[in-house]
Length: 406
Ligand code: ADP
Ligand code: ASP
Ligand code: MG
Image 1: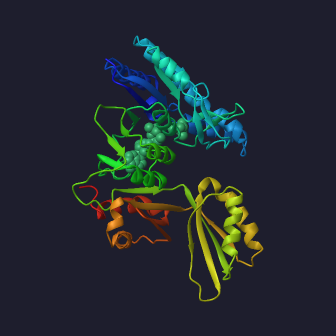
Image 2: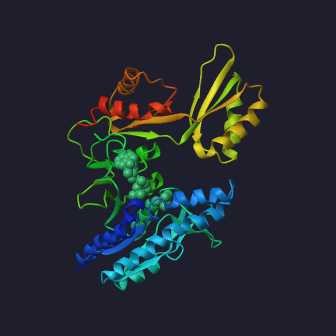
């Protein structure tokens, strides 16, 4: 019986060793037996990608991004071959491919390339022959035939993009937790599994630090309405659906709390209070490809002001150098870098129609004597920058304050 196509993605922890690869094979085969066509996307084994990055770091502090992609893409190539073998062992037909082999064409932005198109003919051909198709996540190829990678966590994107291209019934993301929780269950054991979240909420949570899904994969899922089911690779329980709209019986103001320790804060002190200086600084950073996130400028009575902003940790040193260079010409004071920060955020579509949410968040911080250094808000989120050592306490306090453990 032909039941249609499912894309299944297995993350690094789900294929960390031979035993787990065998259990993934067993699960995949069980779906095959039920009559599904299957495209399976896999990540690199365990922490392979981190280990490869570390290895490169022992050779040079400034590796070519093209070579970095060449190196990192090898991790996923190991997984697909091993999974194909494990499926063969169970007596089923499977064939593994790299991203390039299945026509995942990207732009040339090495280490964070964007998918331009997918030529899925090869996959369709193999599916027609009755094979389970296994695709290396996180990678593609540009028009010059150079291997590219899709940014950390990019196997999620491979899976969602293939699900869209092949018009799959569903995209299943198998991971080491049972779904999307109200906050990272490794930090707050009282975190609760959420039955369903909207693309908007998940996108916000992912962008604000919930690493369980790569943010860009949710952008694509939202654009093309690809239903995602995040679930555990260790048991058969159903997990969390990520969909366009969720009907909730009760008013949920805050759906989740996130934490991000991958940002740094830069402060330009004593900036002369006249038009054009912020433009100068941020244009320069943008030209050099530095993504600036939160920006705060104090109101000035003295005709001088401080400007603080956050950037990704990986860009911090570059941003500091560029900011020093440009602010030197503006008559500003010193430029400071603070690595010791964390961003805690609350996310929920219910915020749109409720007042006092920010005040409740600040209360939770105050009750725990946590100083707030910066604040930013969006339609469906509020973030605070605090000292890193308070991050876990803040997450737990917010989780409790908004009643998420109930
Ligand atoms: P994979 O290797 O399967 O891609 P990841 O490590 O990328 O897995 O993502 C899973 C991890 O995300 C979990 O182990 C959990 O610690 C973390 N996480 C952070 N926030 C959340 C959340 N809100 N819900 C579930 N998991 C979360
Ligand atoms: N292996 C890659 C990473 O660790 C891609 C992924 O896991 O999704 O980022
Ligand atoms: Mg991941």
